[in-house]
Length: 106
Image (tube, rainbow, N blue to C red):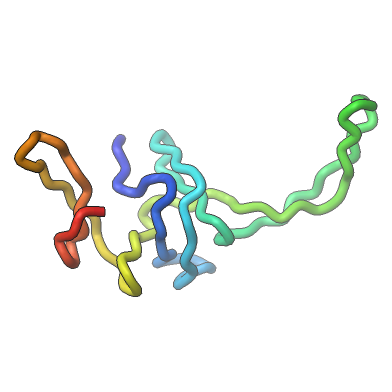
């Protein structure tokens, strides 16, 4: 399935515990329809010390990292307001994403 949100887009969370938070999309997974947004939906993960590999001596502790969000819980931001995404085919045949709010290319 093709998603309208791409890597590098500025988005706002519209549902869930981080509602209203803005951030940049780090990665997109079209198969599971999930996106990872910078600084949003932070989860703590406990890691163990790696005793086996002496060369890559990994330090144990708690790591805070972003967890995936469903794509339906984020919307693209244009200026200060959120907007839906549409498509338009230009005269030369290229398909581009456009903002439904203003009609400008994204």
